[in-house]
Image 1 (cartoon, rainbow, N blue to C red):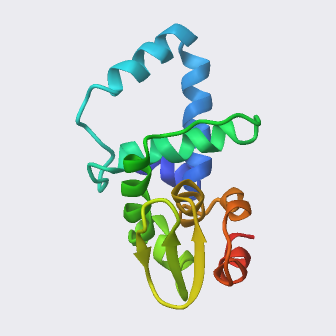
Image 2 (cartoon, rainbow, N blue to C red; image 1 turned 90 degrees about the vertical axis):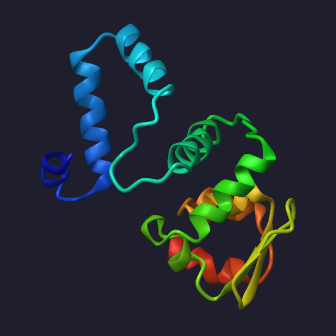
Length: 153
């Protein structure tokens, strides 16, 4: 992984793209699907990742996929709420920096975090914003939107 990170100039998105392209060139589709299914049953994770990280990745990336396609995918509300609390407070994922100076208020679970201009909305939208996705902004309200939006540009 370190070699791949160096090759991608420590750009995680580039590294992931490069690895995905290499795997898709080396293996047939059926084998890639079988590998993905097999990885779902393991407790192994990337170094420095926690137990909630694979689930959080799945919830966020599902939205990354379905929203541009105009589709809807709903994860269980308790899962989204747990992922929101995780991302919003995890420095490595950038949540605290993105949400600095706002009070996050969930319209779904009632969960709150922080102080400052209120940023209110459904958990899935708050999760996307905490994860750095501007797509979540459209579903949020309050003066905190104006604080967070420039950070996502």
